[in-house]
Length: 114
Image (cartoon, rainbow, N blue to C red):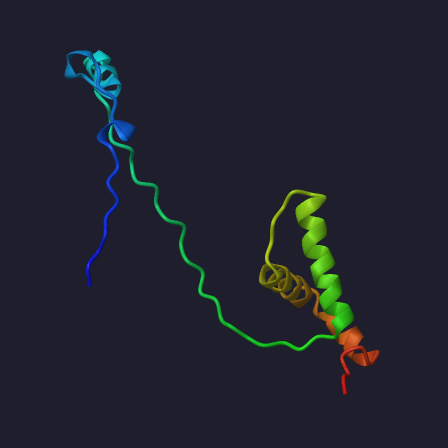
C-alpha cells in the first residue's frame, strides 16, 4: 500500500527571521539565571485508601428520587459534591448510632417489605 503525503511549503509553519534566531529562541536567550536555588517540590503523601465493598440494595423509586434530590440539593444549593454511595454510607452510619430509632421503626412495621 502506498501512503501519499501532502507537500506543505516550509514557510507555512516556519517564517524566516533575521539572524537565524526564532522568536522563541530570542525569548529563551533573554532569560537570565538569578542564582536563586529552586527547591524541588516535596511529594504530597497520598490520602490513605479506604476499603470499600460493593453491595446491591433495592429501594423504592420514590426513595431513589429522594436520594437524587439530596445529592443535587447538596451540590447545587450548598456547594458540596457527594456520590450516592457516600450519602447512603453516611445514612447507615448515622442510623446505626441510633439503634433505638431503628428498633422503633421495625416495631412500627416500617422495615417490613414484601
